[in-house]
Length: 312
Image (cartoon, rainbow, N blue to C red; front, side):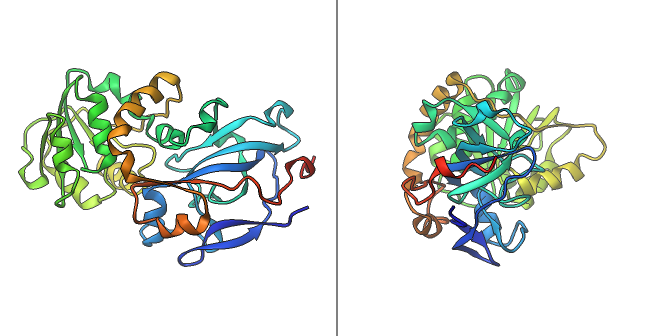
C-alpha cells in the first residue's frame, strides 16, 4: 500500500511535497484526482490574503474518480466521477485538504456528480466553476446590472447575460480586459466614473474589497447583490455591509448541465488562451500567477494501484 502521495502543500508558501495517504473517515469518499484547477483562491492563499493551515493541501476546484468509500455510504459510488467546487464556508485548501494532490479523501456531501463524458473534457473544471452564472439569468432579465471587476470571469459573465439586460462594468485598475469587454457592447469605466444612479443588480466579480465597497457606497438601494460562491474575501465584507437586510444577498448555486456547459464553452472560447493546461505539480506551481486559470491533469500512471487500496 502506498503510504504517501504528491501534492501542492502550504508551508507558509506553496510547495510541491509528499503528504501522507489521506485516511478515509465517516461520510467521505476516497478519490483519485484526475484534474484540478488553480484559481484566484489559490493565488490569494499564496499571497497571504486568505489564511490556511501549515501542511494543508491546496486546491478548491477538481475532478475525482471514486476508488473507495466509508462504510456508511453506498458502494455504487465507486467508479463515479465527482466535482469539488468552492462554497463560502467549505473551500478546499482553506477549510480542509484540497485536490491539488494525487489522491484525496473528501466528505461526499461537498461533491457534485458529473458524467463520464465531461470527465474527459479538459475545460470542464472551468465550466463547472462558472456554472453559477446561469442561476443569475432569471434575476437580471430586463434589469440595470452593474458588474464589478474587469477580468476574464467578468468577460464570460457579461457575454452570457448581455442580451438579457443593460450591463455596466466597473473596474479599479487599468485592467487589460476592459477593451475586450467593451467590444461586447457594454459600458466599461473606472469605478470613479461609474454613475451614482440606480442599479437593480450588482454582481461582484472582484476580490478587491476596496473596489467593491467604494462602488457600493455610491449605489442607491440595489435590489440584489450577487456574490459568487467562489468569492471568499468579498463575501465576508459584503455580508457586513448588508447587515440591515434591506438588500438581498444572493449566492448562486452551481448548475451542472449540458445546456449550461455548452453556453459557457461559447463564451470561454474567447479567453481560452488565458488558460494553461499542464501535466505536473511543478508546472502548476510555476504557472500559478501566469494564467487566469491553470488546469492540471494529474498523472494517472502513478504507483497508486486503485484495485489494491480499498480500505473497507
